[in-house]
Image 1 (tube, rainbow, N blue to C red):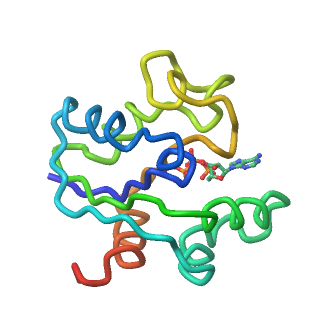
Image 2: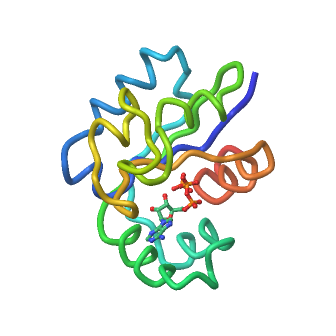
Length: 136
Ligand code: ATP
């Protein structure tokens, strides 16, 4: 079994898709082992997106992710990392995500794309420590 860190980004909360997205997670069969609503600090958001710090879109990404409440969750199950990324769809909701995925079905924008999911076991461990230090 495996754990992954998932975010329902501020656009997902603002558009009232928390139930829709968690419903898809539950229908997939993943377990929700931790869950909270919070507005992230600039410090934690910068740590989370450290790999993008030099990108041109980083300031806008930081502004977006800190713009309002989001939902952070730890999901668990066999191949949880790949399983969540499968149901999320590709980063660009139009160019990459396949119909039937969260992003293809519910989003248009390459930045405001509703969800985040860890991309490797190392990322998951790093991100869970940022968002859920209490699980350490
Ligand atoms: P996430 O890390 O949120 O799951 P991802 O792994 O699919 O997304 P990354 O390439 O790691 O995609 O980008 C992280 C996030 O940064 C994207 O989900 C999106 O919100 C934003 N982003 C990525 N590329 C761009 C871009 N070219 N312009 C604006 N925002 C972008």
